[in-house]
Length: 192
Image 1 (cartoon, rainbow, N blue to C red):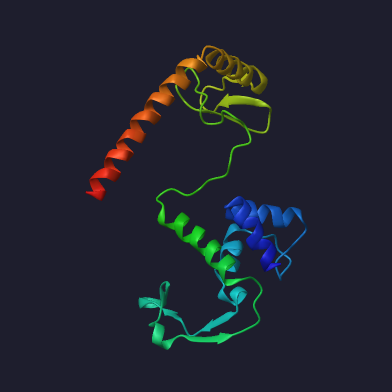
Image 2 (tube, helix red, strand yellow; image 1 turned 60 degrees about the vertical axis):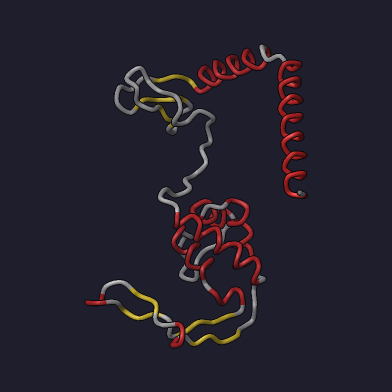
């Protein structure tokens, strides 16, 4: 089960999506509850998966608030059966650390191409709710998904059909030539 959780998380890179997939597959927690992003995070962070059981590494902070880490010299680490490789555990925890260090979190991927980009005449963003239409929360203006995405694809195909590939190719070759000359100059300077 832990290996499955890690594999899903490495594929999706999202804790809530991992929890949703586990729930859809019929998995439940020990108490029979649905998985949440918090439960998934706890299981991904647990070192027993990589074969190390940690004890005596936390204590209650000042005035009974928050748990804090003790000095590493006080930690008790014992070996236990490994569920996943240490490389997999490190990769998962690297992603978690990276996500926590960012000021904004990696939200869910939108199902709809233009969610959050389409704006109403009142300049508010329009989103797709349960119905198959983009809707403004404030003024309730509605546009069918097929209409707005049809307009977008039409605009995009017009833009792409007006591109002159010969000019792009010519510019790319010119830029490549300049970069190769610069590389040769740098090599000769370094050799001298």
